[in-house]
Image (cartoon, rainbow, N blue to C red; front, side, top):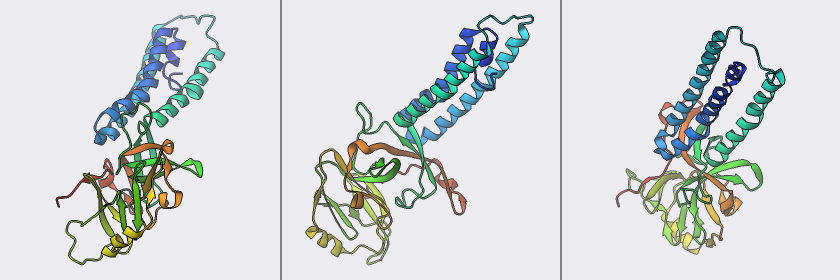
Length: 303
């Protein structure tokens, strides 16, 4: 019985108090408590902390089985009380597996940590197709510790399909003026593009370094952006991000469905921020170097 549900074997042995505590430790220790602890640690510790939680839950499950077996052996001649009927065990099992566990799991996914798999190349080179991510869901909500900032890699709900999520980078906040022309992007009149380190003079490249304040990241713009792009963008129409919305772009500008097509995204639909890559798999197998990586923006280069 404890193989089916930790605590059920203790309940059969008549140890009601022990059964309740075993089940509570299993449910809380395997889901909300470790997730909360993981989010208070450094982002690099998110994956290891959640792995420890899984091992802890597995250990509690094995302990419950062994403890119930020892308890049953010690109760020679034990007679079951009148309330111990098959319906009671079925009710406890259904309540835990069908109601309590899904509710706890849903709460953790919606309010603490959620796992996502990235199927597209829209955020290359920061995030690759086949990356599995942990997202911090304590983001952009009343009382949340994490507010929305330019440069964040955010998770938002597809406005045309509420069951689908996108991952893009926040470029503009409410009230910001955004201009886009060719490979150049400006926010409030400031160019995001910076000369990439190691780039030779006049070198043509599909990659470009962008920075906002002290945060930088690489983007793929297809054919190399010319200085004429910046001049053209001065004449490009400016879009002012409306109140209660943000402007998001994919790092892979040539293969991304983002605010250029969807328009500014309501803040209420921005639900999480990418925290850590916990697994990655591509055409050539597992990308070991990406496991545990942090796809956050780096510090700005020296000018």
